[in-house]
Length: 471
Image (cartoon, rainbow, N blue to C red; front, side):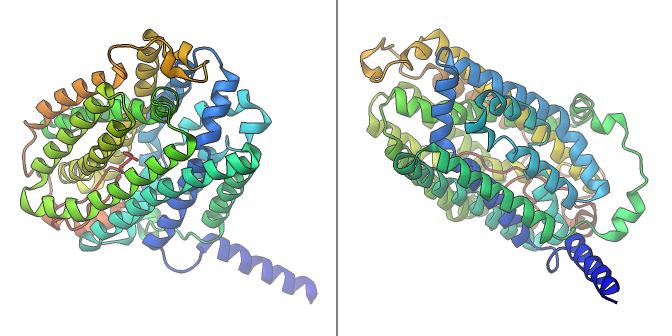
């Protein structure tokens, strides 16, 4: 009798694990995103320390190489994961992507060499946002989707606003080991939450019809995806704009904290406050200002305005040599965060409803490629200007000063200028070849494929695709 009860209890538990808690909702996605990026945000200060201790010479170059391998693997795997999630469901791929993305965290203090090796290899599954926004597309309709993306984007920004400051404080007070331990526990909590609480969002009917469907090499080949999308002029222009504008952003994100610490001489506490300020302003820009701009000047003009802000902030970072200039440029950088939500709407309306997952994976792959090329490019330029040698000194203000404090940022501003010129040729209201954006509601909810950031307050015709990573 006891054995039967135990078996029934085990079956009930397994069913609960399989089904999750409640119905699929945006709040499940919000929790997953917050925990993952909060865990990594805690490691902002320890990461710089371990990177310099492990590779005291050519720190920027090694960092660029690590991120380059990760970005290349992300570029190669993103289309396949996007296509598979359209067939096999979101929950299992959420578990896989979060697990492998967070796997390197505990190795930071155990074995730095293995830590950086695992970071490189984790790029194969570092496409959590692809699955998250496909999950949201499954559980929302067109009218609700903009609000849902806004909530996820705000959560993403909030996790990066708070966690670096907490990590910097704990590192200064108790050491890096405690920070790594806390980040590891939060990552484990995220994995357990997906395993126990997150229900499957892709409708059963959709999965039953497609479970046996083969995944062709064309769907998994990132270059084939790029060639196919290149046949559509509008999508091609948008992809070029994304590449040229995100390339310097990825390089900036990988090296900017080190730049503030070593070149501008910001303290860890000041860097944490700086991140918080930019994050808060980015949230305001993506909610209040983005809504107003989308309703008044339209989608394309919002993209152009965001690119203009990005050009200004990169030029200011490149030419500025005083702390107040960094703070002012940070405020401008927050305003540039409106670019990708507006770009995402154009991408969504330019793709067929049943190809949203594939387009999502392709766009994420482009950003993954930029995450590799950007840091490598910035690291090489810093190396050319002897910044790697300057890192080995405590006070770098007395080392070899260049006429231009931040040469990579100026180069980034030039690439965004080219992106601005390309964006001028993007149509204002693109429509997909087969189905207009206005009729996409039912089919998009079944296909369940979507991409990255929020578009709060946008018109019903638009569905956001790209996540903001300006913070």
